[in-house]
Image 1 (cartoon, one colour):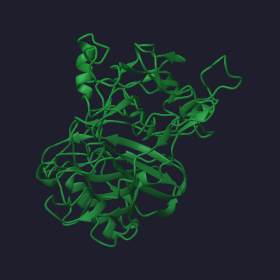
Image 2 (cartoon, helix red, strand yellow):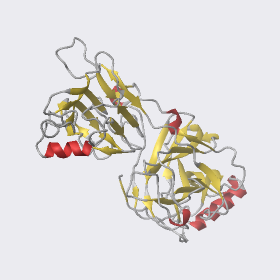
Image 3 (tube, one colour):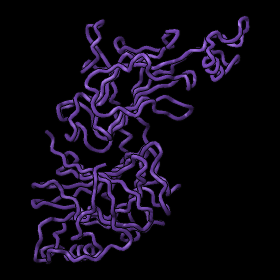
Image 4 (tube, helix red, strand yellow):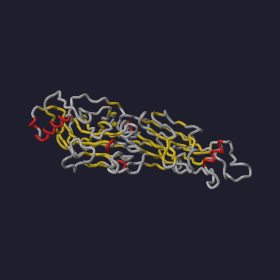
Length: 450
């Protein structure tokens, strides 16, 4: 099993504006390994739009496929994969946004020039299926009652990772279900009644969309699904009363459905010196759009990477940073912090959200810092990843939407008595950081899992 350190939390208290001056319980000096206040050379920092390289995960597969006795070998659509690095060897990962789109389904129920779709539905509700009075030509066809049905199977983390069945209404997608999460316990049949599509345009657009958050999946080993995330088969759109089938996919002889992922959202991490002041003026990092500082753009998975710090790290280390956060809790926007040791895989330290509604609300992340996975390592790298939903993140008070990062440093968790063992400039920075509260004896703020 892969080792991962992931703590997902909702930050409910953050020290803001004036950080208290707190005496450390243990005298002495922190052994500073690395420090950056973003005021010098930042060429080692870089950022990346992680949505630009996302692979499609919906695909046809025989793995856990629906058992159809009419076929020798069964195939189904599966959002997931067989991966030796996953717990159990199969399942799904963190931060997935995967879609399976049906082609436009033409219902062909009316001639637009003669009568509107809404009028046809009104006739249906009045009990008429003939299209008008006998001998008239107001309607060229009978009004239909289109229904979507399918067979499905799912296993994903309860309360956090969902599969939605969605239909397009104008330019927006609406969810027909509340999201499948947890385990279906095997294959299920939504049944003949399915989802009614009569309130939508002709042609009708349908998709299945799976969303997972930043932690707890087969990829990090914290949720071991049974062939998750989602399987679907025998997708059908038909007239409930007339029985005519407008679309059917049993996934056996090719499929007209299309796996998709969101388009590249863009990279918005950049160094700023504007309205919302840095923790140590004037510069700090921000993920957002200068054209509208109250809103972080939608559909982001933007990662900001620190320089690679090299050395002989034998003592356990702790990561400290100053952050300013305005992430409204009404949506699923969040950010998480990861570390990579010796150029290997990324370990998640935490994931946070919170809305503190004031531009100058700087606080220290974790109060006591975040423990880096222990053991000897020769290089260290940090990244902060900002996630936003379809609506983007905001609004933020005084142009402070999202998350800001400043004054980050890595310290050995062992205490030393001889300050001259370390660079004097770094020791002075450590004393300044202690005075500002970046190293604090205050107990950590109460957290709860997202």
